[in-house]
Image (tube, rainbow, N blue to C red):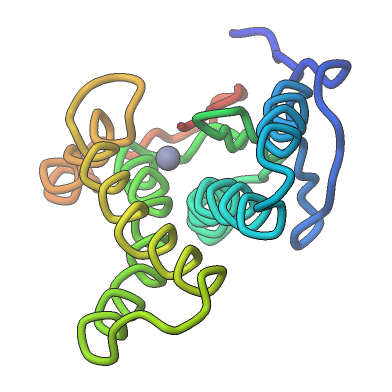
Length: 188
Ligand SMILES: [Zn+2]
């Protein structure tokens, strides 16, 4: 039996709760954000929007894991945001199949937002407002590129687990464990 590992809350700052799940931000996120903003004071609204949208994409991705985990009956403990990745902490899934579904949750959530935005930009083009264009570009093109990257079958990327969905789907009835193991899981 593995011991429970609690997140290092002392380095994390609670910023909000989403459906009862606490969202933490690592201190380095705030420090890097402050340094970038100080270096671009004249463009502060735009830079602030870009930073917000960038972490918004990571949060959206983690929320996708959270929703998928909750739908599969796994308790979700927290979401943590770091400078270039996020972690969703949740209880051990019941099966490998459930695990794969949870791994897909992150990129599916991103795609549900990115695809309509990309269609919008393709049909109507960008707007006259830089701030709106930045949001369209980050939740659209940037997010799509991170989806592709994240689905590479390399640990610790989601692709390392996600592509096991199809073999797991055919084997799930025979591989379903009888007893649930305690433990923690986290995904980028
Ligand atoms: Zn992920």
